[in-house]
Amino acid sequence: MDEGKDRSYHEAPATPRAKPSTPFSHQPNPLATASLPSIILAQWIQPMVSLGARRVLEKEDVWPICSSDACESLEKRFRQVYEPNRRHWFNLSPLAVAYARTFQTELTFVLITCVLYVVALALQSYVAQAILQFLNEEENLFHISSGYWLMVMMTLSSLVAVCALNYVFFSASRIGANMRSLTMSLVFDKALKLSSAARQDYTTGEVLTLMSVDTERVFLLMIQGPWLFMGPLSFIISVVLIGILFDFYSALGGAVVLAVVMAISAKQGRRIADFQKKLLKVIDERVKVTSEALQGIRVMKFYAWEESLAQRVEKLRVKEVSLLRKFHMYQVVNTVMLFLTPSFVSGVTLGIYVLIHHTITVVEAFTLVAMVNICRTALNQLPQAVAGISKAKISYARLDAFLASAEIDTQPFFLPEGSTPTAKSPLLASTNDVYGSSIGHGRISIRNANFEWPTTSQTEVVVAATESEDTQSNINSGFKLEGINLEIERGSLVMIVGKVGSGKSSLLSALLGEMSRTSGVLEIGGRVAYVSQDTWIRNATLRDNILFEQDYDAERYEQILDASQLAMDLMALPNGDSTEIGERGINLSGGQKARVAIA
Image 1 (tube, rainbow, N blue to C red):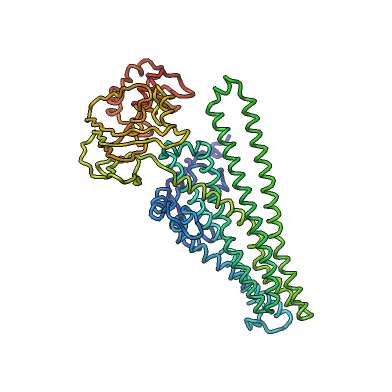
Image 2: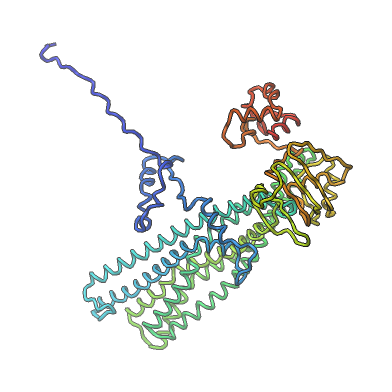
């Protein structure tokens, strides 16, 4: 090979890869600073849409929620306006009224945009009439002789209507999502504060139903709610325009048809609501039975109760399906009737107009149909909205009852003679901080106090005692503790001794706020920690059970291990404090479980 033809080849340096941009999860949500046009045209979300077109979105590709949508911020606004015991006009739900006040600014903008949408539709009918008059070489309402300008007006009015409708449902969805998350937070928070008597009224299955089914209905009402406003509004505007452009009798005929249909629909709606109430009761009972079966699965297996339980669940399911069939039958009839209403209104209106004037032009016919079509979309969506408000009304009533149920007396306080306890206070707050008590830190003082259990047949005591049957008997019979005087100094070890059924467990429940105090003074200087005989541990490592989501502090951790006498147990475990315990971990003895609970 000729050397002259030799060529030297050099490897080109690798092109430096671009550094990955900051993931969306570490960036502020652009919705918080987005302008109104950006929200209407959905420009603020385009970066995420573009990324999703290139690859599958992951958790890091989602922006954090706006600070105004955070549950903590929403609950702070809600607590300022929530009045659970106040009666409102028309028996409105206190929770619904509080939501309306919490989101009053957002709801006001939604209503204004609904009006803009209906006005834009009304303008379209006027422009359609002007275009038909232009084609027939007649003078139009706008005195515009150019068809191009009329088409521009039609395009702009259509664009305004579409943008307004888009903003309405974007805002309604955002408000509804905030309401749903806020409702779930309220239910969860309330479930942690229920008194013993209230816990018998609401099982775990019923609380789960409140957090899933009822919160979803609160959300769906906001999605469908705008049609409840736009439906009647669009119909009123449609009737007024028909009366102005044509005659009063034609408009009156259409109004009468709609009034009759709406009266029938309202009656159907009440029947639908009745079926919905019955359906929810059956669903709650079925969920309760299923939850109890899962919780007591071992006992069910030991006694071979599978067939009996399956028959019980099947019986409830048959009843549920029967109610569902009736519920949907009425709902379908109502939906079809309202769906056909605009056609009925158009036919009656045109018929009356022809009957009076004996003739009708093409321009008049098309304009009349365009006027009726103003309310067509809203009336077509109205059945779903009516069904949604029926369901939400029941859910709001259930949520109101749950949120107004009795709570644990978690903050002991001074109760003057002859008064009744009504105050509610933060969970396990300090008496000294809240009430300015003179009691020293770490002391417990009970002076001339009387306590009693609610007179209910199934009240559950929070303290698991050895003599559980006798204790439960005391509770069921409305057991009372009278004239209790007790002073416990800081650092002292106190044992409560007595015969079976004498009220030892009830006294502990009184200290925890589970037992209602009717008179006297109960003061606790500080916070309360309680470890029951029936210990509970999580399915996690032993260290996670001790830390309980708190940050690890080596020095404090060692102190806790020493105080709870767990050091010897860690040496016996295969992986020390990294050993998994709980349902899918190793089994601990009763003493080990108790020491873990204390830690």
